[in-house]
Image (cartoon, rainbow, N blue to C red; front, side, top):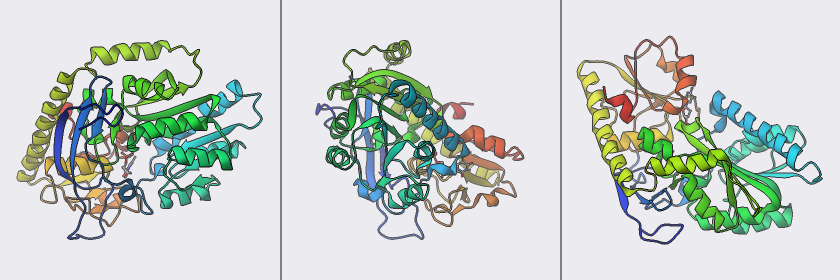
Length: 403
Ligand code: TMP
């Protein structure tokens, strides 16, 4: 395929085969369930994995989007910390600006902006999925129900103003036209403004072999090298980064327009680590693909062994990532009885592609013998909550399948 950023021809590294939408939960089995062929290619010059084919965004982000940030207490806490950081930044760096303005792209249910609104900061959320943006509005966050783009950035400026801070979490990796996105951010940002965003980090995916970060919504997996290259083309300079534990390993990026920028020591070290960890080397991606294939076979074999020993297996967390795991590993109801999840909109439905029933997590009791932890990125929170569970936790991750 041609790289969406550079238009250069780039190699395919992994083909997952036929895949449904990660959040395409079904009321009942249907004949016309949507599938696409999911394969990924890499631009290893800049450390950027991308989906070769991505379904039309309107198929994924609509009035029944199944992901609500507020379902995880840990994530609510995380976004409270983000809003505190933005609030401090506004007071420290923009104290003389009387029209401070914060825009969040992909504001979901408004959990981050809500705290800023309460502190009388003027904010705008941009969120195309109407059911989650309705929740955001309920919490007093003005929300634009659109897909963010260069044209939308112009609309926001004409109706409102440019932003001191633009923030986005787990959204930029969803937006296929990365050039338009970077141009839109540069346009919307004040000259002295700051763009802050975070996404699952390619370095963690390669390290943990967390291939489940690759699904229809994640058109990209970024590295610091790729962010530096993409955004510099539009005059936005990467000055700092922060490693995060969210989503199984994410990176937060800090970018400014100021040409007198300096890179933080942490960023300089991260660039060095990306090189020494092979993020700019095609062989690392070939190794990644080999390990994914190993983990795929091993995960199913483990479940089959438990099943043949008559153990009861239940999934924990009907995550969009679990759709990638179940379909790639070819695991369905013959191995997993049901999956528990706290999100009401998912309960009573069937998982995409494999049609495993999703139930309220009250059904976790009586406890099964084995629980496949699909929400592995919330392990700490879930293990604390389920400390009475004495059965076996299992994940699809390469390192957990080695023993
Ligand atoms: P995520 O990995 O995309 O954040 O999705 C997490 C999913 O796991 C979401 O559907 C909610 C579910 N979940 C639970 O069922 N119980 C929990 O304790 C947590 C933290 C998440």
